[in-house]
Length: 344
Image (cartoon, rainbow, N blue to C red; front, top):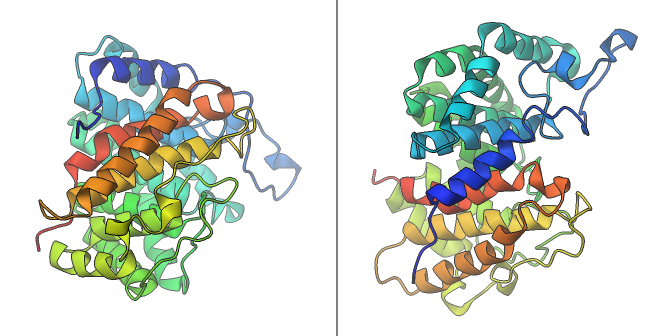
């Protein structure tokens, strides 16, 4: 089976989309708790860096995508535009402004865990890029959110298994990448502990409720992908055997069928395009973690291809998808080959 990959042409297209909205302040879906009238401020006044892309978290992961594309294709035609953006945005003053927002008591849970995970994923990418000035500039915000994870996870008795922003497995999955890139042992330990507590005993996942009407994550598959990323291979494989035992027979069937998207101008319904892309990412990564010749690999790879084909043509139909979907397409096309269940 031919595996789709991130090409220079696609990277140029995705970069063009992100560069068109990361500094577009409006429309804006502002997630902002106010303690008084003094807190009634514009997105850019509240967030000196991540004020565009319709909402804070989408702006963060659009910057991650640009960093990823720049690392993969450093001489791409839009590389100069990306570098100029990062030089302008990732300054100590702007990062201090972002940190100041989190210092307010009303912002204790702001964008937890989705935005936290994406910010750490961006910081990890900047670390891997070798462009030290951007990584050093963002470090105070990354450190702040890594510590927030360390404070929050031991307190969280239960996971959140939704298919949207509050899903805890997705947050752990992204935080693990930062912990590895930054050699943050404290974060790595609490993330692994949370994953084992929340998901370690899960078996025979039915996935009967998937998809819900505004999912952009599969609760079943992102849990499996998080465990793949976190567990040693000798622990992950038997866990995965128990968690989704019917994969070779195409069960649960709901995980193998791409979602139907009825209205791409509706922001919630448009989430389903993201579900198809995130499922493609998870299926691809999970298949790669299995031994060669495993009978589950072909149906998993085929499911990944179907979901990618269902989502990839619709990245810029409407701004409700355009401001974020390319990031998930980048995950689906380029993330899985770099990672696998650890060999010990």
